[in-house]
Image 1 (cartoon, rainbow, N blue to C red):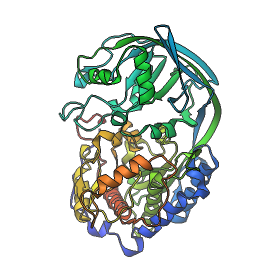
Image 2 (image 1 turned 90 degrees about the vertical axis):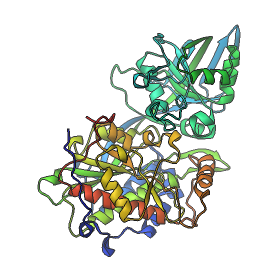
Image 3 (image 1 turned 180 degrees about the vertical axis):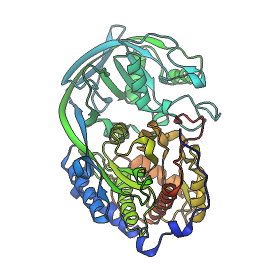
Image 4 (image 1 turned 135 degrees about the vertical axis):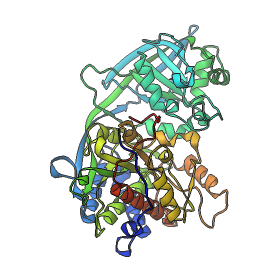
Length: 531
């Protein structure tokens, strides 16, 4: 267990953003523009654009003066993956009461065979398990002792709604609401397949986002010998779910209402689902990009503050309005641009902090945090010697920020320092504007938290100078509904990168202060990640 930190006043001389090392909005802008250009083809994992992007980031780290921290003296940490691309001739059908309906790939369903075989047939009786959650701490169990071994599980994503902060943390989505948890729990219980029924309110995003994310090659960690996996992990659209349930004589809205009640019990639908998954498999040698600026203290330099951002997006995929390059300008060329700028600024400090700074651009975040999970299992700096992870993911270049969002920071002993840095930069600390979206469990800092490392993202602003109070909600809705995970997430010349400069400055000062503290930070006692 780490010692508690005695926080002092931030030393302005030690952490001042001197002119020669200042963070530059212009440089962040230009890095974002190039990283999201068509030349990098959407930075797809296992695609040419992804290789070009990692080469570019490594080169920028070198130009910044950060030293290689990857394998064998390189800037790269090798991450071995298996690409699984569900083929259009894959079949999914349901039978009940002597009637059968066939579902169309991409239109009605998307998903993958996680067993990593070129062909996999499965069939099973369907059990509706509500939200698929077993959470003893909230006295909630959707399974209630039901044996689901060999079954096909049908469920909603998200979790029971509540405004009670003591019940599934109120409006804030917990990990129980994430699709990753649903598949993991179904596998733990021996299910053959897990199918999520999509609705925009329960998922928090449109079917087009699910289709774009899952209707393509998906990178998975290579299974170990004998390791079990689901024969199918996927989604069905709301329209397809309605048809499936009607076949079983059920109503989607009624089942959702039942699933939100604590007395819910699993429902055997009297329906069988059959699948014939045809998959194109290929080994993918991807990589995290890692660079380090060594600390100045002979002992503490073996410890580090990590700055992270994912470099991947969806590469070249299904055309939308004739555009097949998923550029990922906001998600996450912005985070990588900040990462490069931070490496430059940290390297330029005339007097380095006591601890080292590790800059980590990770792969396959869009496939379920695969690159950061790999790093957590194969760390360059052991978790016990890692002070903090500060992550950057999808920041909005919409002007000068008046606030900063650091969801999760309050759960760590770094919180007083976070508050002091915000005060120094004249930024208010705002709560998560979309707690129901579960942002904390959707970005790479979560992999570090799993390993016990205090970790959170320095997120996008929600208040902008000179903009009306309703500017952010409208702008967020516009981006989330029309551009998130779509080819239209492209660089705009009109963007103002001041807020990204401020977010980088915030992390720059916070990281330095933590790097100079006498003791390592920790989670607050009682937190789920506390050791």
